[in-house]
Image (cartoon, rainbow, N blue to C red; front, top):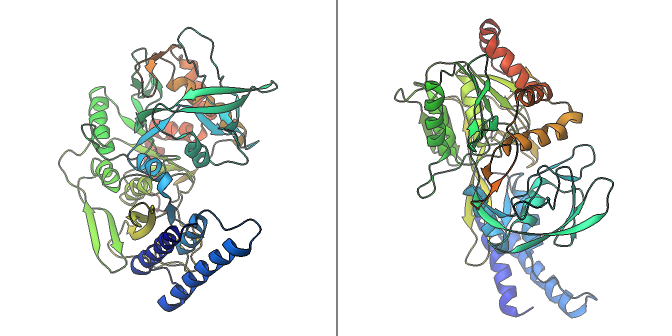
Length: 467
């Protein structure tokens, strides 16, 4: 490796370490002098490997940077230069992939396709719902996470990606798809109607609405952020006589703090929504305002272990103010605000926890042996303290894939535009039995509807002591 590249690697690590030293309050063993000595050792090892190792020296030191960054805390990440575009798209609510819908089968840990893929209108699908995704661009998927799959599918707009697909019990085949840029839908309903629009009224016999927030996306150009979209939607639902709301925040990975606060502000007329505190003690309080507050209809929020960061602010604030009943499983317990820092031109970025958040004016005592930065233990390991539901309820693991396939079919049931294009996907309008099957498979949703239909049960649950 040229000496110039080696110097830049050393600079990258130095800046990453310096950022950590200045910005994070997780205890760090050692001193700046020790860190300088460690960097010297790393450079020396690299030179020795270049001169003597059978396989030579590594092409770069990104893995070393990642390994160090992980030691800072459970939510710290190093984003290499080649992954910056992907990460920025994630933060901005955008994607650039073939628009494949997929999930990981909890029983087999295989990646299952949830919706058919048609390349040309009028032709047979090249990928069927239920097919197994074995490899992406020749890289076999072994115990992958959803993020692993998303990273591999991501790429430049218009570029091709090769998928190795297997129909259950059938032969393997290669499929070539084209990546397209598109914006993630922040809000979703129960199913799409014939006009390709989401239908949010879940029960025709009672005025109950269902809204899923996939992620909290900030305003981008002329496209409104999640808060504004949600406010406009609730106005339309109110005009249709919505008398209760199921707000689904399950598996919502986070997003913009500002947008999350705006959603809560529509339900509360006054009081503290959330308080953030940085390591130097600086605080910021986000307060509710009476203006534009929604009517006081009953609300049930669905949460689970995939509810992390921004949606935890919504769930926590609504629970603290006894404005909603929470159903499901405890949230992730992230409870920190993450900030993105540039390591330097062409050197990537680092994601660090820079503030913790709370729903009270004074920090509550932390559990013994845990750092008050809720969710991070004093030893740097995860110490989840998620927001517990009023009523614990989970989906039967055996029904997860059936439910995922059903939801995806209902989302594409009408002639809705495919991601990044003006083409249509022909299908059939869902029937009421589809909705009933959805409710039967989704036990937390069924519990939420039962609460909204039973005012006395809802009120008794809501007035229970917050947990």
